[in-house]
Length: 514
Image (cartoon, rainbow, N blue to C red; front, side):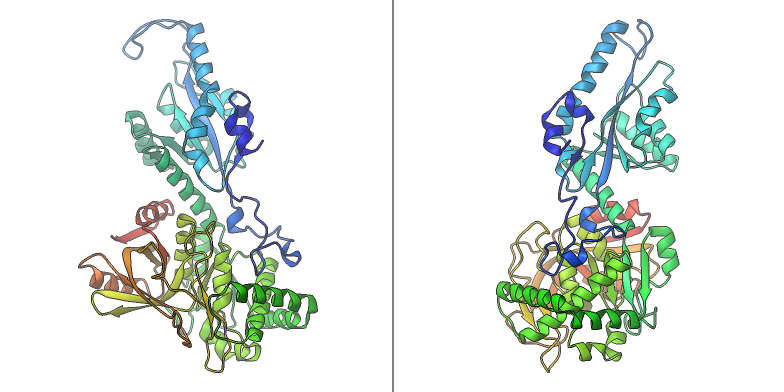
């Protein structure tokens, strides 16, 4: 049953399922459409395809007799109570229809269940079995905790899954405090909008924990330049679930050589080039170099598919020294931008700490990031400067921001995207980066106050955002980088509270400047 069928029905809706957002998105090619080359994706979890499965559960008390007392101040017969409990559950789809569960991309609402118990407040196994059928796919329970508080805890304890509730009333607060004290996950949302945020953050964590990074390298880590990157890859896998797949340049070279010899692939690259040139506000390099970049994009996509990866990085200095970029007339810049357009994390210079921050920022905000070197600038500001913006910085479901195409090297090749960051209504930004141990994340709320690169035929890393931190806190931010490293990611909008919440979900220390 689809979302509309579920949400528009009442009794029939209780057996339904809901999928919001583009949960079955096609694998992206160079233009963002499906490509025959990339259709076979069984081993790859595409970030846009990740669905959070929510199981709604209503807990209800059914007394075995009629009496009055300190927890029962009116006399209700057993039959009348049973009728009320049944009707409450049958009308629940109306609440789900208008509530926060229906407002988040990538959420699937499983068949709702009602758990009943007697005045001993113990959920029998026969009632727990109502949840067992879906437990393999359930990511979290949305609980309406009627009848008792301990029943919600019992669900979390039994299935070791997060529980989420709506409201900050006495019962919800009590449940969350006790459940958390037992080392289990529990969340209570203020209202429907806050519930949508919590659900989105649970999905963002799921996307993050399914990240597999393709990292072509012969040298490995630490990188020759961005030495402040995350370096203990086994620890990152064990604690955060993030896997970094290192492959040798030899394999990448073989794949690129095949791409440059494949006539069908060349024709696809040419079509993608012409489409990009058509949409570009201005182009400052020869078409043939853009074609070469799209061939490298095909190469990276094919390697990601082969190794089951959904994120990418490459160490620019090692790559440059191999002379392969000069041979192929490419720089990684456009590839990073194109991958980010399709919700894939893709970072410069083998910087895993920057990539992890990007993954969280993109999932939380629904927008693409810009990454760059971070340097102090006058008037209590700093810059973030790399030639890797993307066209989806206003949202993956929004039209492209205006962009130009520039060159990276003096002789004219190395396609890069240029964006005028100031040409945007939104000026609030969120900046983030993981520390080298990947157990802390620095998050800054700032204001975009300047940009360079637009309409300028500049080489190298020359697409710059200039950001002002909260008043009086620029020096504090710049000094905190000593514990975090260089590259910073930023995204339009203030997402500091959401980053704090998702960071805590991942058991990270969250260092916020706002």
